[in-house]
Length: 88
Figure (cartoon, helix red, strand yellow):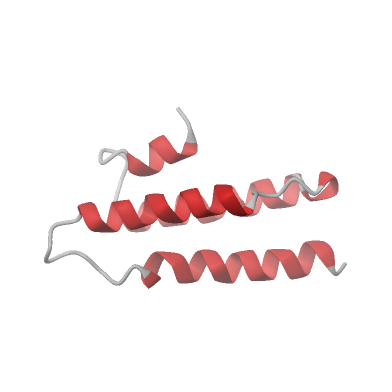
């Protein structure tokens, strides 16, 4: 089962759990693959962002939150991972 399938599966925890899982996965993969510069491509990151937007939209109307709640942490980690990996 691919990462996107896990993120979109309603049985796999809350949206916040999925965000934490994705960030841990992203950090782990980024650090492990930094030597070969094979960190997620922009299109792959965009696909994950789309998944989080879908997760947010699938919440009931009373639970829906600003999509930035999911996008901002990913962009923050992405920015700092780039700085750590490419400026060292």
